[in-house]
Image (cartoon, rainbow, N blue to C red; front, side, top):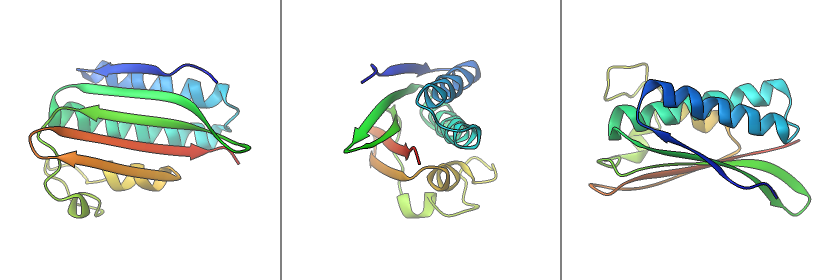
Length: 133
């Protein structure tokens, strides 16, 4: 299995780097163009949240296997303020930054698996996976 690759998120440019890393990894794993775009978009949304709400963090991308299935796993981590209300943050249209509120709910819809671990004052880790069909 391929080694994990990570992007440090500290600026808008780093969001683009993380997005490209995810798209390139998905392409190398045999995902089609539509799934590559879905994965890249989800990573872009999650990396933007890291930058907006925590200031910095990381996006790690790796190949995964479960039985005969192959896929991609993305882990987005920060040491920011945490998410006070996960359920509310996953509602379409909810935003604390006056944006469109598509970040977390949009990323969740684009991926097959989506998990949020968060603690106030400690940070947030979001793990999401997409399986090749």
